[in-house]
Image 1 (cartoon, rainbow, N blue to C red):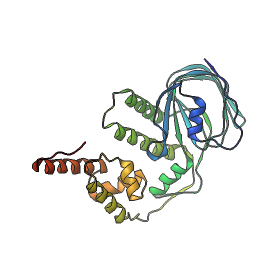
Image 2: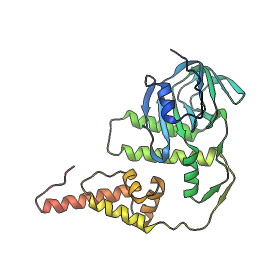
Image 3: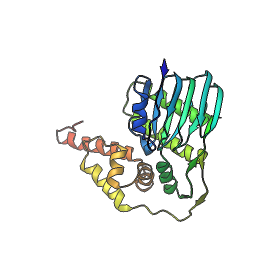
Length: 269
């Protein structure tokens, strides 16, 4: 199957546009519009790219090869790589760069993350970054990224389970932290000033949990109520309350179910 994609005029394109551009026929699995921390993952079937042009994006893209390819050509920013691709190799396409592909692109997982999400994570953990650049790279080995992508893909191949969203959110959080640590070309200084969490934010979340004992609350719901990012909310909640938000919600539901059973009622699920 040959794929021809015309160059799109204009500024950097969004993740939603990039997904529409690729189409759904090659999509094996997807994290949806966005997952934890704004990281998005797509598992795509291999195809023959005959002069495929990927317009400049507003997000960084990490292409993780899941299989071998005998011949692949990539060109970005005036540089060209031509040769084989091996399973486990990573290709890095920084935001703002157009990329051209020829040859056999194997099955792969595409990881997308915006510079803004990397900057937000850096700020939350006390790192002040002057730059957030990610360097262009055609072919590198990163076992950490490769295995994380495989675990993510394997999880989506399993039968759905209530714990799935916890596993996927954990993987995407780990991926964001790994990309920040490994791929950003940054000048960083660590702030040693303690970050004082907002007790009001935690109180709002706790009140919301107790007001909705019959609702299955997700981490994103509670973070939105608190006004904090998911990553920072989860870490702060666990530190202040002594257990994770998910565990606290489950315990609250169990306590409420016991109370209603004693009164001869049951908790709607």
